Image 1 (spheres, rainbow, N blue to C red):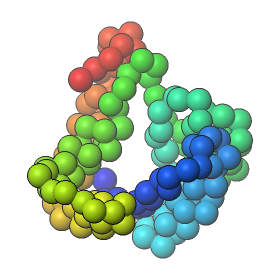
Image 2: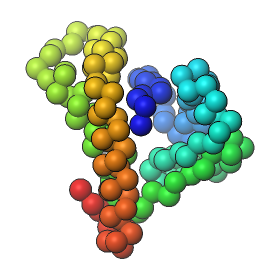
Image 3: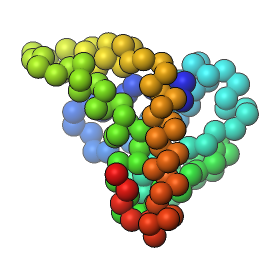
Length: 146
């Protein structure tokens, strides 16, 4: 709700599996939370990610349990419930539309700027939209909600 905590471009090459995801949680996300939101790790984290095989793998769930992060359930068959999918990426696309990039580094830098240019109030709107989308799923037997 207060903005992006971690912007991590996935490098070309490695397979995104449970071990990779676990490493990002441990070595990138947790330190970024500690740096950007001091005290949040101690006060408790509600964590939402989809129910794909990688985030639900035992290696990942064990790490999150060890951190004592509360996992929010992601309804089955409900894509586009992550604010990145319905908010952040479309907003970045608006900023990046029509641009051509020569290198991967150019893309990374342009997306960094696009994220910084996002209106801080839009994160509150995205969070409120997310809550509405999540609330609709149980009312629709967990079926897709757009």
